[in-house]
Length: 315
Ligand code: ASP
Image (cartoon, rainbow, N blue to C red; front, side):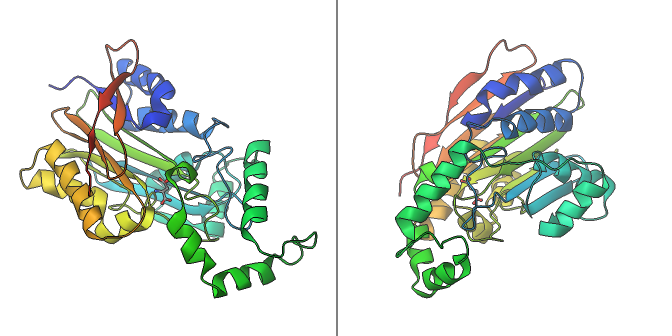
């Protein structure tokens, strides 16, 4: 029997202890994953998730999140949701309370409100400053009438293909997402993802994080996988489900992650991709197309998060 454990991306390092404690006390993988991600969502210094997440092109933070239960293969997700601090918890309610798997925008907000979530302000001084700097840098002919003339500016921006050009140049530093996944004492697996998406994204743009199969997938019989990076690429390749599928068909978790990153390179697109995964025996792995890959691990006997090295899959 595998000792219950939890793993996460770098930005979850400090918070993994929350999930490990839940597992140690006999809690479920889903409780551990949700609580850990909630703590990341509350961290204002993390500009890729929850509070302080960099807003969209109109200056509004729009969140994506998903959670999956590996025993039943039930999932819940929200996309482009505004004004709620804990999209991961709304996603969990979609899984538990609704007959649906994905709610978006105003519908997701209506659902959150109806089940009792409080609205909150997600912009911070830091994310406001980052937005203002972006606007000043990007919008030609910017003047003090910017706020009334946003639509006009954006029409120009799109028309001139600046959006595509800028998106191509987007750096890793302007992205960020949290992946957390756990296996509990009953052998149940859960995986969760939360993000504010790519910085200054087009309003309504949805990344891979809330798309089950793209940015998140788990199955008790196999393991768990999730992604961070240029979401469009993981959507095109169903990266998370593909990693599970590679394992199902006999690859090790390491080889599955490496192959998935090779698949990304084969698209010959700009933008990097990273994945995090484990198999049902407790082997963990991460991989990246762009940088040294590390992830963090804790089990019920760990005193602190253990840094584990993944693979940099070069083109
Ligand atoms: N994958 C996220 C998205 O595309 C962003 C990120 O991980 O940086 O929305």
